[in-house]
Length: 85
Figure 1 (cartoon, one colour):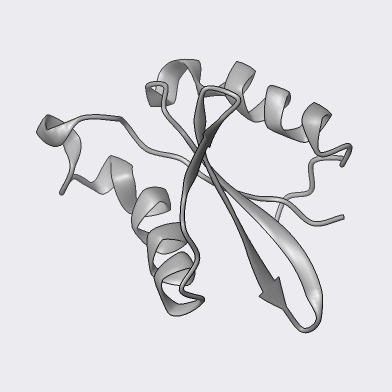
Figure 2 (cartoon, rainbow, N blue to C red):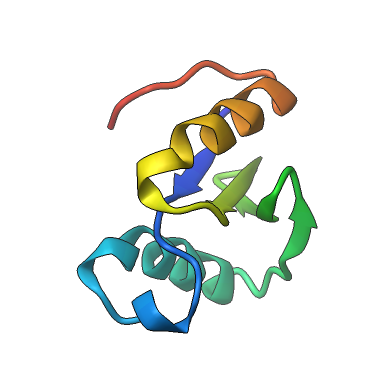
């Protein structure tokens, strides 16, 4: 299973900073897929269909410097292994 994680810093203060590019990318994909977000695992999650496969997309709601535990929780929940792209 593929899992896409968008990283960033929560809050309006960081909304348009370079640290939130990950949020912006997954927001764009979700918007194009007309997918709605739900709160799950301390973050926001949606599912999109890519080439016939359902792909969960996660945005962590922790700050970048402590996002590792949120990402780990998402991978464990969705039973997948991390892969660098």
